[in-house]
Image: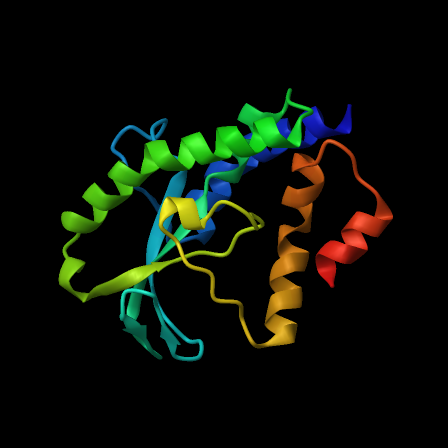
Length: 170
């Protein structure tokens, strides 16, 4: 009962948050297409060498991707099977990738964009999408990010337990 109420409230607050407090933009002219919202950012972490030889260092320009979480959670709301939820997320991301590529190719800063970065709760399947994982070294940063994503976890899980929440945070 609480989940649909929270999602409805989030659905109406999201546009206010999106337009007033973020520098995010949609990757498609049609906002209903694509699950990503993006912004350019300067990388502030430790130097990372990717599998293709690309080295990302401090102050390199990256495209930061964000899931349109409320849209995604509404699509998953009636599902109880975690595997089915994973398949839907995978399909949504695959469907959005061409839009993301087009966005980058036609972006005025395209030549400066060195890579794509994002923080996610997804811990399986990202390599099939062409992404690599680089975990943050700073434990405080990691804990704060996990804490900020806790509401998404609580709204997306079929079953919730204190044990799972504690395991997630630590």
